[in-house]
Image (tube, rainbow, N blue to C red; front, side, top):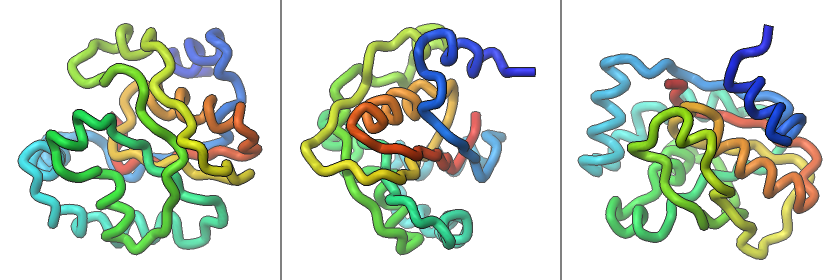
Length: 167
């Protein structure tokens, strides 16, 4: 049986953009507190908390890690990219291939997230054939699928995803 989110994405032209994916943790009360402290209260040292888990998840990865970027306004507001910091804490090399060009999804309901227009564009870098997209939080899959579609259209042949947390 296919989940409702996956059914939606397949029906809207996103079939086969992501080969596989996983998340490391579920979004529960403890994770909610950690996430708020890290992302919104800017406690950047908390990136170290999951460094070992990320390193273990990506230890045999041959694909290029690509963090999901923030838009410029959010980056100025937060003063750091939470995904970049997670990867750096885990000593995982990564490449920025995307720029955020669409709206932010925070504060939107499930349907509004899934109906969002394309969120990304390429930043001009050459796109490798094998990629693993990395994000901090996976909610509906909108962010990951939009990013994967742009990268696939630019020549990526294998795109997997890794999210720290699954809401």
